[in-house]
Structure formats: C-alpha cells, structure tokens
Figure 1 (cartoon, rainbow, N blue to C red):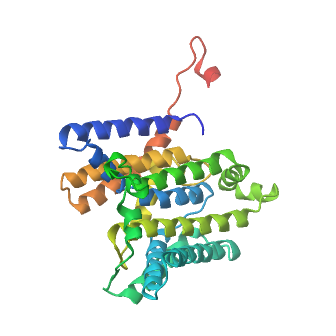
Figure 2 (cartoon, rainbow, N blue to C red):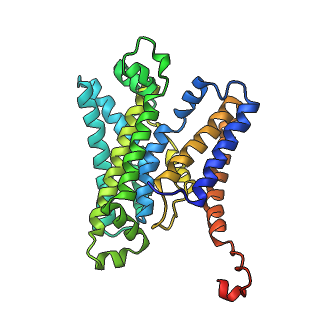
Length: 333
C-alpha cells in the first residue's frame, strides 16, 4: 500500500516487545493455539475499527456502532425464532446495520448536526431498544454453521480431516480480507483520496466538486454494514444474542483507530496503522487475561493507551529537527 511511516514502525516495535515480553513471562503465550485464540480478542473489534477509521479520516465519528451490533444481533435472533433460514437471518442483520447507519448519516448530512451528538443519541436509542425488547433474556439455539464461523478455523471451513493443520481462525481471516479491501479503497482509489480531502477541508472539498454529504452518508452506512458483520461473528462465537452485546466496544474501536495514528481531527491516517494497533491492543489484553488481571484494570489500561495514542504521535511529529551541518538553525528550518 505505502511505505511504513514512523508511527507504524513504532507500533511494529511495540507488538514485538509485547509478544516477546509476555512470551517469556506467561506460560504457553507463544504456542500456536494461544496465538490463534488471541486473535478472537481483537478480530471483531478491528472490523468496526476499520469503519470508524474511515469516518474519523473524513472528520466524522460513530459512537453508536457497538449498539448497532446489538440491534443487528437481535434482528438475526428474531429472524431465527420466526423460522428464517440462515441466509435470511444474515440479511436481517445486514438490513438492520444499514438502517442504523443510514439514520445516523441522514441526521448528520440532511440536518447538519454534529456526528458526535447524533451518535450519542442513537447510541442510547439503539442500546435502549435492545434492552427493552430483550430485557434480561437471551436468544440462543443458533445454527451450528454460525458457531463455526465465530469459533472455527480455516481447517474447519475447508473440511480438512485434521483441522488442526490449519488453525487460523475464520474471524481473523475475515479481518485480514476486510483490512486489505478497506486499505486499497482508502489508499489506492480516487474515492479514498476524496475522503482524505473531506476530512482535511470539507469546505474546499465542496467547492472542488466533491459530493461531501454523499460520501459521509455512504461511510455511515458502511459503518452499519461492518457492525452487522461483526455482530454475526460475535453472535456465532458466544452462541447467543444479549442486550449488552459489545457493550463499550465503541471506545475500544476509537482507541484502536487513534492508537493506529489516525488524526482525531480528520484528514490523516492509515489502515495499516489501524490493523497494527488492533493486533497490539488485542495481544496485550489477551496476555493480561491469561494473567487473570481484573476487567476494571484492563479498562484503565485501555483508557491510558487512548491518551498515550493521542499524545505520542503528535510529540514525534513536532520534535525539532537538528540543524544541518555547517548551517544556521534558521536556514536549516
């Protein structure tokens, strides 16, 4: 896609440091099965982080994306209870994600409302609907195929006699394919360059003929689609639909995006960095889980990572460069 920038190299170094450190201090952390299991810790979050990255690059944000996952899972569960086949269940989840994303985009583009305010409202709306409709109940009994998608490996998917010969999780493979597709779209297409332009200067983009509102609406709908895909995989993995499904994941997705080097003000960032940040955060929290670290401590660590991710890239970019040899500092600047 492009040469790695300074922050992406830092992320690679941090990933190596995390896996080396925990590999030496936590039993079996670097075993093939543990490494495969660790991908379940970030694959679904990475899917919604990819959509969040596009929105933030364009100068928008979607705080309702995890609540959209809960509604998409609920729609899939209701479709199953109504006797729908698996394709119709998936269609119900997808339609719900598209509807939620379209509502967000319509409110932002048609009524010129700030996306952070709109999606705080729809976060409460979507999550509240799931809580009201399900209460303290859960929908279970999903088809075995769905469980295979959420928990299985490529060996299971391809029907190998010995699935352990190909233990790469299906979820991780889906995440890699999505990362490649979104990365090519953002970095190698005209539309991707326009998204950068919209985030950098939406007014100038309008005057240059870019359909800013159309792009923003499309990105919100894409966020709904990715939320539905993540919901399908997560529902299959845990085997149930619950009103608190993916609770708080919107903050994890934002942390991944910012940790990946995407500028919160828009106009700058890369999908490579987002993918690396997902691996870093997922591997780190998986190791903490193996060490039986409490969930509240993990939340504190994720919050600290978000702060560091916002400060450190700016510090790296703003460091004064050394004057060229034999030249005054003013000339070297």
